[in-house]
Length: 445
Image (tube, rainbow, N blue to C red; front, top):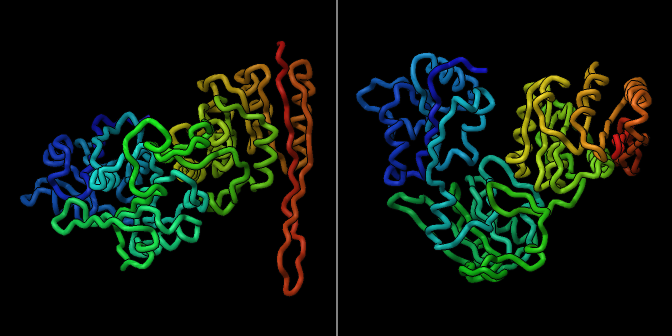
């Protein structure tokens, strides 16, 4: 736990014009002795007379965190972020570096809020995506009746290229399309057109794009027409949220490996994830542990299967912990994923009772992990374990045999081969074979 006595104040400075900054953020910035922000924000809000220690946010995030830590030893540190701190801001890095109890957040008006406001368009049913330095998943761009998207853009992924991308994903040519640029500044522009017209329009970068499959924009109302939501979508409760907005249906298993952030951390492959989740029998409201979570690929798959539940990911490697946060963010499940940086069984004692336990990595503590998991697992719950080596598999089987009054189990051996083109031929390339062991806790104890 942190022992620092001062606070980190993350202040949302709004979309651009000082007129749109909330008074609480302005007061915190004006009184700050240590001030962090982008170069433009510092030039706009740092005291010209001096008296403030400042740090510009660059790619050297570690250096920024070091400045914050040094400042905290002497005074509160104010960190300025554009728009609202809750959406793709430095808040993520601060939470990973410092205890959340040290952080106060002052919300700001986001560019999404401004764009939808300029269009007099409700956005409770919109999915928010970012093309700013990243590309959304293919499934998030696919057309469906009633969909409404708000998108951050950059110079490369601009209003024209995004319109072309949506047309390629079967969006109708007459879909409503709005380009909102330089919001709150004197040269602000808001242009309304069809999707086809946007694909032929001069490109605009670093703006907000709003697209709706309903033309004209949605009206207020309680029915499907008012919300831009089809009856089928209304009836499907198994949906994932992205930044608080409705997103894609989540019943599909097996997210492509390429859609996860993975770095140099080993990841459970797509086909093994499909079988693991299928064996887990995860309920909509399940509490799931993912032990040795790695990149968080199984964590995400589990969270998508339990839209009313919670997933606790336990991982000992800091670089993997960061990836779990990133992937949970990417797939819109961060609000239901709780990451514990610890080497299991450490970190398990304070967790709530669970319905499912996924074990992908156990180090040399498998028996102790199973002991701890068994104490938390509700009757009828399942433990699903993945192993590469026969020795680790046999250790698990020995534990289960010692608890045969409590558990039934089965094991399958999975070998996946992928065809690779080699010149004019297609040849099989084998993935590592995996043992998947499923243990079910009996209802009567």
